[in-house]
Image (tube, rainbow, N blue to C red; front, top):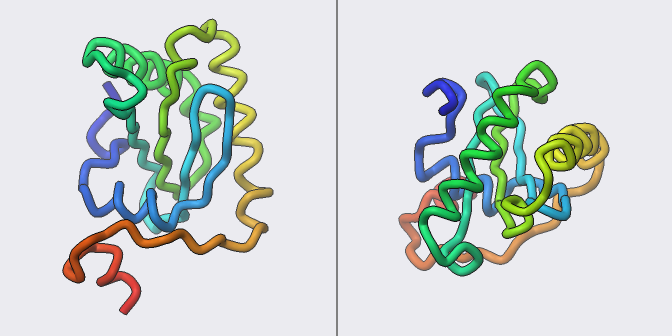
Length: 135
């Protein structure tokens, strides 16, 4: 388990990352990130659609958490990171998963130079975090 200051815990942070975060793709996961004023925080999404059973969702998140603890010195600074997991996270050997994470971290500076692509709003209520951020 990552320490509390290193985890994304608020629903607002997850919503903003999913709507406004810049994506970087890998075969086993997608990383959405945005710059932050605080220290780097990490969150995980493993959907019911891709991982039908809870034990598989939890195992995928545990594998990535353990890997991120190991490569913590290479984390980008002052970023919010959201890992959206794919089923390949479970089957990929640990060493390959580690290289995929490090490769994605190397792609972040290049992705920051790209223009932000507007994403269609998914929020149904005007009181949503995403609508309030625009105002």
